[in-house]
Length: 580
Image (tube, rainbow, N blue to C red; front, side):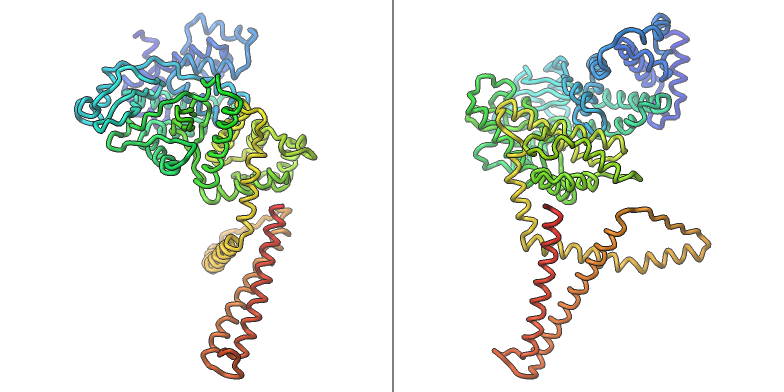
């Protein structure tokens, strides 16, 4: 190692990044060498200008440094294409980063997502001897004591793991997914470098800041840690297996927990072919596959609230018995109750062609910080202009979500990660469905589900549940109000300056909602009071009695019935007005 390189490594070590502050010198040399490799790949793909602005010229040879300015004049292909090629050449975590970004249209433009979706792992399988060591290390005994038979040739190989066919002691044929032994350390080292590059990019390249590269790396780190934990994938497999255990059309592998660790997951071996490889299916068979996948996905979202987030044709198999199998549960989306409620509102609005309600659904769904809501809503209307006055069956989900997420980036609105995964999954499902069965239409398929949701929302059970929820929230607010008021008075007594600045065009609407809620609470209190009064009158047995109950008690019950009916009608009318 020459003196110049040692100086550069020392400079690298002086960076005030917590992650690499205490790295050993050997590790720093390795990371430095990896960074040089990445920088040279970027230069090769025509990113000389960015390398200069990032301060990475020192990682290039003298000849390449001289060429940096000249490279600006050379015609280049689309930046997304060049980035995809650079990721393929860098390999490892960089390919995985691209694959993760292909799922996140909220973080990067749609054309980049489409290009990064082309990324393939393209790695050579690790040798059987290495696989054997991993299995024996995980289970603490020879591989032939764990599995009766274990094929040396893998069924499939990727950057994180490879899959082998094996047999358990009970004769069950299984697929064993084994993690590459050094992949976790390699990925973490690459993530450290990516954090450094992202920090430099935000510091020196202003036009990249809106994409928040440090956030992208943080998201990728979470994504990677989850993918490297095979126990998490096994739990996902078990969730889906239980749901589809008795399905006539869908088959999900079973996870074998006695043969599963954080680096090895064992599941049922399913004999079939990927949908992407089924070229000889008849039109009828293609339609059947498409409709099964569509309906299954609807059930996952609206009943399970857990869905396969990467349902591309390579992860969907057609088995020999005609059933459809979902594989690879490394990426699974999970919907919280609040998120589910928002998505249901969005689907109802989408199917009914209610663009106004759809716009509010997108606004309610995201985390908004100090933006002009009216302007954002108008921009949404403008981007959806082609759908006004047209059948909503003509909506292209890829374009629809792409334009919506583009606006979200413009206004710095952050949508929940699981919602973005859902949007990507819908786009993937629609694309696959239209390839197999061009006459299929996502909106038409989801319409019965939307009508079912609408009926469910207007059912007495749902109305009562919402009334209880609203009453609880209001009671909690009133309960906390004295404490909050005391805190405010204490601040004022201490001399703190309290400034209230309200500039909201929807205050009037909020006031009306508050008045309406207060009236309902008053009705509820009156009803409760009358019920209690009726009970006391019955106990006292005073006055004229009809059918064993005092007349005054009957009058109380009659008033209670009328007030309750009026309250329910009020709530139902408001819900219908909000949905239609």
